[in-house]
Length: 530
Image 1 (cartoon, rainbow, N blue to C red):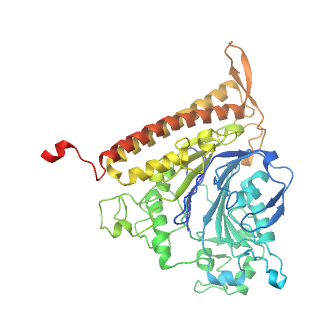
Image 2: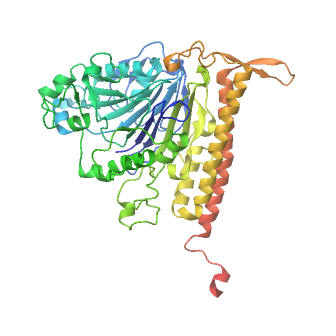
Image 3: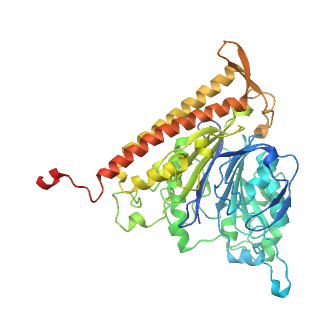
C-alpha cells in the first residue's frame, strides 16, 4: 500500500486557498518515473479502454484542457495521479485504502475475468481504478461537486476493482470520496476551517445520512447505502441499529479495517501529521491509536511549506526517525515513514481565490523522495510544460528532474547529516525563488491585463471561465503586443524549471563531492601518519 494525503480547507490555509496534496508512492520494490504534461481536448480519447481492467467507456465529446503528472511508462495505463483542468478543478487519485471482508462479501470488487477458451467463456472486463479515474472525470467537470457526481455515476455503472480514496477540489470546496466495495461510495466535504489527513486507511469517521439525503451540503453517498448497511449487518458500534445512530454513523468502523499491520504502516503517519498540525489536541494519541480523527482544526494557518514538510517527513524529533539519534535501532525502523524511498512525486494543488481564473491554479510539484528535495510551483492552465519535467526518460538521465532527484536522494541517504545542509539550502532556495516568481508573474499579468480579474466575470465556484484571454507584453520595439495568458504562464513555468535545473545540478555536485570523500575505500597518504 502506498500514498499519503493532506487536504487543507480554505479557512485553514494561510492565504484562503484550497490545497489538496498527496505523495504518490509506488509499491514495494518498484519506482515509477513521473512526468508533467498537458492533455489538449483533441488528445483526449472519445472511446476509452482501460489497460488493466479492459473496461470500455464512451466519453463525452466536450473535454477541456487539463494538466497532469502521470507515470512515464504506459504498462499500467495512464495513471494521471494528479491534475488540474482549465476550469480550476483539481483531482488527486488515488489514496489506496482498505475495506473489511464483510463489505467485500456484500459488494465484491469488480475484477477482470480472463477468457476461458476451453469452456467457451469470453472475457469479462473489470471496473475502473486508479489508472482511469482522473482521465474519466477531470476533463468534463466545472466544480468539485460535479466531479463527485460524475465519479459516482461511473462507480455505480462500471464498479471498481480496488478500494480507493479520491480527492476533488475547486476554489471553494474540497471533497473526499471513498469507494465502498465494488459499487458503493461515500463522500465528505472537508470543513473550510479544517485539514484532513489520510494514510492508506478508510478515513472518514463521521457521516450524516440526513444531510446526504437532503441538501447534501457536506455529505454524499450511494442512494441505497443505508439499506446496504442494514441488509448486510455491517454496523458494529454498540447500541446502534445496523450501524446507524440517530441518522449518522462512523464509516471507519462500519466499512474499514484496524489491524496490527495498520499500526506499523498507517496510523503512525496520521499520528505524526496530527501531532504537527494540532499538537495540543494530539497529546493523548499514539502512533498506534485507532481513533485518530480524520480532520482537525490546525493550531496555525497551514502553508505550502507545512504540506511539503509533512509529506516528506520521517518522524523528525521522535524516537521513530530512521535518520535520527533518539530511541533505539529498533524504534528508528519501527514504523513506515511518510516521505519514503518509493515516492514518485508529491503534488500539492493550490487554487487561489484572489487570483484571476486563468492563473488561479498552481501545482507545487516535486519528484522523488521528499526528504531530499522540495516542491516548486508551476501554473496549471498552460498549453505545454517545461521539458525538464515533461520529457522524463525511462532510463536514468540527469537531463530530467525526476532522475536527478532520485540520484541525489540515493547518494545523500547514506550520509544524511553530512549532506543535510546542502539539501536544506537547496529547498530554501527553490521555495523562495518559486514564491517570488509567482508574485512577479501575478503582478505582470495584473499590469498587462488578464482575461478575467479576481472576483470578476468567470470567477464563480470552480473558477469556470474563459482561458483564452490576452495579456499585454512589451516587445523589443517598445510597442505593446498581445500574448496569451497560457503562454505567459508557460514562460514562468520554463523559468522555474530552468532554475530547478541549475540548482539541482549544483546540489548533485555538492552531494556527490561529500559522499565521495566518505567512501569506505577512501585513503590519503596523510591518513597513514595521523
